[in-house]
Length: 107
Image 1 (cartoon, rainbow, N blue to C red):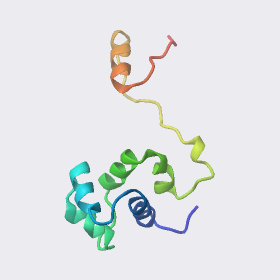
Image 2 (cartoon, rainbow, N blue to C red):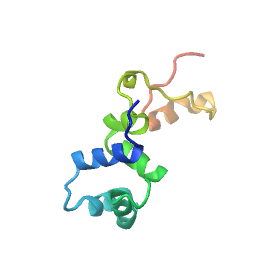
Image 3 (cartoon, rainbow, N blue to C red):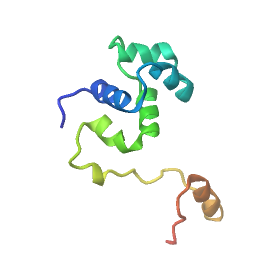
Image 4 (cartoon, helix red, strand yellow):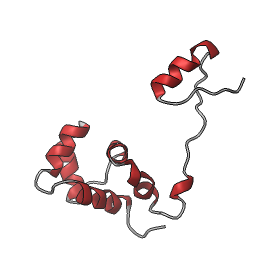
């Protein structure tokens, strides 16, 4: 685990991936989160919100695991829990298609 905070890691990503001169304006336009909120995080007046962490993870998914956990050693093993919502069998293919997931061949 890293000694940096999630704020440190999020800011490292933003520093590496965005132009300093237009960073907070671009983030606001791209994510819908106010420029003032992004600026507050950048100047360490506010911790990043869950929405900010989610937005950065979606923009740069290759950094998501490291940003949240601060660990690179097990980043190849992360996974999601099974979907809790039950989809009727006759709608499974359509729902999976929308989600971009291959439909299960299991009964």
